[in-house]
Image (cartoon, rainbow, N blue to C red; front, side, top):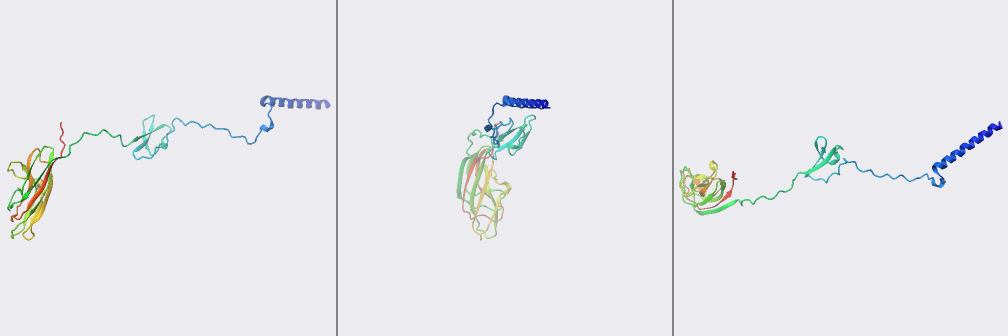
Length: 252
């Protein structure tokens, strides 16, 4: 019995000695003061961004379009911000307004020539079938791409007590130096006026534009007095016309 107890003690002592020796071999001599229940938290190094991480959204700009471009099939999606792009897509953007181009060549000024006319208006007989000039006229020259624009005012009246004078009025032109029939600027859309002896003299203004073609033209205020009352109480006509570039001619 005593022998058995002694053997057990020897085995226990051997186990304890072996355990201490093994711990010393593995960890060395560690003072108890080194054990602290509040050990500092381990340092975590930040990870670099993934290769396909989209850039931050750009500053809002109404002229910029944002999109996500799918690399494997070329599909393009318009998005409101780059955060909507998937890892398989590339964030791209472009400007709606492109760069300013070089300035073009200096164009024509527009106004080619200006003429004025003024003077007294004689009596304009009744029963007319065509327009006649009322007062002085002006001559202007145009090319095929140039037009004539004018404005003119004329006081007209009648001394007749037999009725009201009804007439058309407009700006007219014809080839200079000829007695050709006048062509009125507005065609069938000329204005119509009326005067009577009791109403007295009234002022009538015409303003219009026309593209007559190339040539030199006599231009002025014109009246078509197709009624039965003569316009014989007229004053002075005053007006102007300008020649301007109105059409572009293809040089080819």
